[in-house]
Image (cartoon, rainbow over all chains, first blue to last red; front, top):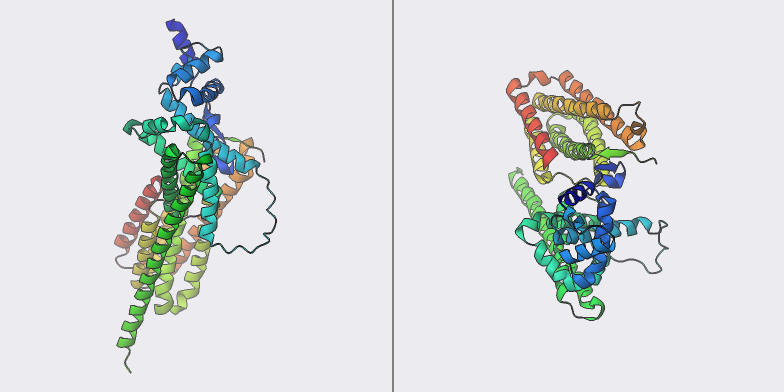
Length: 258
Length: 192
């Protein structure tokens, strides 16, 4: 019995490859599930199929390993059990966003018939809205267990893992929405998308509306509120620099001898 | 394009390389901007010289911004601090006069030239030209960028020495302080 446990644990390390392709996108890992050992990935995929009925639980993992013909000790390769399952769900859904953008038709969309009056920020927000909704739709199959998952993710010992996943997700969303920055707004943009996403996920848990219409509206209004705030900060900055230049001019004119 | 595997350590080194060089070129751009702002008023005769070096730095900064965005490397978290510090350094040394500005250039470019050299050495050691994966277009272009920029930074160093950087007083204190500051900034920008 003990030999089985040990041989399984050795045969199935959770992470298989430490190598990544050198490719523009791959200095950061947009395909996180490819890092799993193929057998572990198969087990997690099978367990995810059971999550809608069993939740993110050890039972789902055990039953999945039985269905695949693995021994009952196989799920021991995932020492955190339910948390590993949740993290796998997050990674798999993030990967789906990346894959969807890669397989999207490359040719540019046809010229719009009506002129586009949106500002750059609005266009970016609309793209983010679409991506956040697309990502949240990935939660629908497991929606009944989402509150439990969130409760587990925000426990102190799991915070680091959850936050780094949230960061990776917001990076994916902001990048795909077309935001390119080499400045500090790289961080503020990702932080605000993370905040909107996290709030929307919590809202989604309690949403009883048809097809989650209320959640999509919530995402839109939160993004608009954020944009209002950003524009406000920009306006204050403009006002301050105007006043600064004006005062320099006033002092210069006072110092000039007539 | 053929895809060649990068180990985690290599990916992490290249990520750091892009982040620190991007922050460094941002700093260089702003140092020359600060010097240009002051010297174009106080010493119009060396204005074209400063402008020549400044334009090269702007090109470096644009190049590393493009690399940072292409490879999705996060910029340095301390970007606002680098901006203030670099502009301040440029203005302050230019206010000391031409010699002060040139001594600043000499100190900065000495450190930066050495820094680019270290990176280039790493790239050559880990991607020796005879290896198949070193022929990857992205690796060769990264090498040639670092090499070209190192040469240009060292050209600036020469310009600075030819333009009386050694006449600055207190020369030793000024250059060594700036060098230490640059090394500290490189250490921090690689990490944060």
